[in-house]
Every structure is written in structure tokens, then in C-alpha cells.
Length: 287
Figure 1: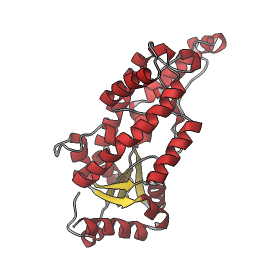
Figure 2: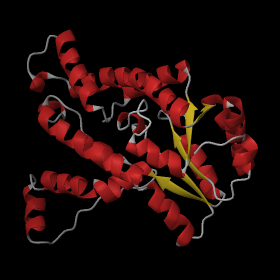
Figure 3: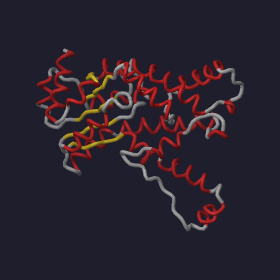
Figure 4: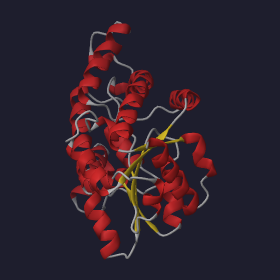
């Protein structure tokens, strides 16, 4: 949604905001603050991991359990039940399922399997984002929440085309909520890379970008076979490439569909009133 002024946003009786940006810029911090002030909190990643990827995740758990004779017998006799305990704060089951491509002896999965899981995630994320209008309705109709905040995943920019004014996901989000980009800093980007080096984790890549970077990584390291790739080595290198790829995409979404605030302003937001002022100022600065 676009507003003629910050005052217009302040006067919006039932607010709906979709927050997006890099990992660690403050998306979830703001969402929790608003939730504590009686806003409905919709987590895209949680929706992906429960509604759209839940069965894939649990099937993968079962596949691993079937390799252990003791657990295999219990599963086949319906003596045990395996499920994912994914929460807003713990999205590890989703991350673990995505995996990392490369050498199986180092915890990697085949590149073909990785691409399949990446595609499943893409479809799931698009569906979860398109669910936002329905959840705005549920929040108001069932739970009696006046205001709504969508905590989007860092890969929002990978499943949309910000240059297309008719992009279905961005059109859906912008028609039903205000899109708010939290812009990071170069220092934050460097910190994310260093943190990732210590604890590499699975990520989602735009398909064409993934194919290009996978080939590039193998060429740089003179690797002939996919199975020879070190999963963590590619994950760390690919993550830094991914960050620089995403920054202009986030900016384009904000420029064409929403508004921008700065990461350094987020610690000063201690109340709903502070948040409203932050967004209002961002609207006025864009006029």
C-alpha cells in the first residue's frame, strides 16, 4: 500500500505491514515488539515449515531413521511417531531439510536432490506469501486483532521480480499491506559473512543464480564432479555471493512497491508509537 503522507498511515485504523530485509537487520525483533502490543504476527518461514514443507521435512526424518535398524523396526510397526517441532524461534528442521550440496561423506546431498528441495522451497515460499491476505482476514475475524505484521524470510527477493509492476507476489503483498524494507549496512554484511563462516547453514538461491554460482565455484576450485564439492566450502562462498546479489533486489522492491528504513534506527523502536513514527517518517521522506 502507498500513502499520501505519514499522517495518512497514522490514521489507518487497521494496519498491515510486511517487513523484509537481510537476516539480522531486525525483522523478527520488530515483529515480536508489535506482537507484544497486540498485533497479529505472521511468520512466513514458520508457515513454509509447517503448512507447505512439513511433510517433506518429516519424510526426511523418517528416511534417516530407516537407516537405523532399531528405529526402522519401530517405524515399520507403528511403535513410534516422528514429527517436526518447528517454532517461530527454531526453524532448524526447515534449514536441515534444505541441506547443502556436495560430498556425501561431508554431509552433502546430490546437486539434483538439492535443486529439487530448492524448488520445493520456492513454491512453498510463494504460497506462504500469497496467504498473507487470508491471514489478515483470519487475524481480524477469528482472533480480533486490529493490526497485522508479516515477518518475511530473507529470500523474499529471490521469488519475485521487483521490476515487474504486475509481479503476483508483490502485487498481492502491496495491495494488502505496507512493504517495509530494513536496509542493512556494509558492516552488517561483513558481520553476516563472518558469522556464516563459523556456522554455515543451508540457504535458498534463485534457480538461475544457483546454477551459475555452482558452476563458477567448481571452476574456481578446479572441481570436476559435483560429489567432490565440499558442502561447507560452497555454502560459505555462495552465501557471500548471495548477499551481494540480494541487496539491489531488496532496494528495487522498496523503490517500486514500498518504503525503506535503516537498520541503525531499529534499536530506537521501543513501542508501537516509535514504530508508527519510523514508518511515517519513511513515507514522508519518499514524497
